[in-house]
Amino acid sequence: MTPTVFLSTIVGSGAVSDNIDEMVQIVRTDVYERWARKLKDRNAVARLSVAIRKLSLGKFGDVKSVGGGVSEVRIDHGPGYRLYFTRRQSGEIVILLCGGTKQRQGADIARAREMAKKL
Image (cartoon, rainbow, N blue to C red; front, side, top):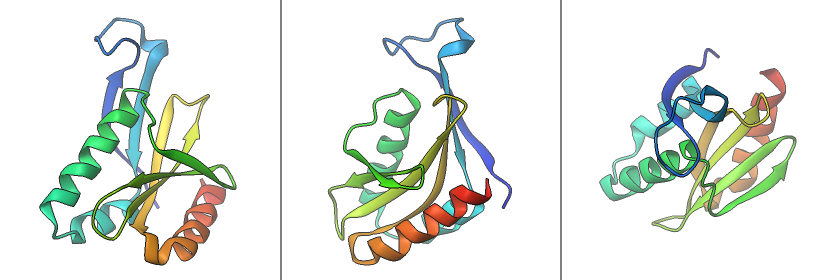
């Protein structure tokens, strides 16, 4: 599993600064990318993009820990989309592990935990 860089932005008041220590980098795994490419609901894709952008700005919103160093972003749309991520290097890097829906939540959490262990 080779993570690929998705987005880098400076965190703080939302303004871009020269302080590289405040950067949050979003990285997507191949597993996450394959899941996201399969989504046909454009509104869902847009909402996921907004959620990822907020993560990049350090605004984590509706997030909860699901154990094993993994957190879940809940998207209140359609079947209840979920993004699973882990943080590295004191939160400077957020790795999107996988995505899913409320219906498969248990299996998706188990998968995300296993993926986080292997990073």
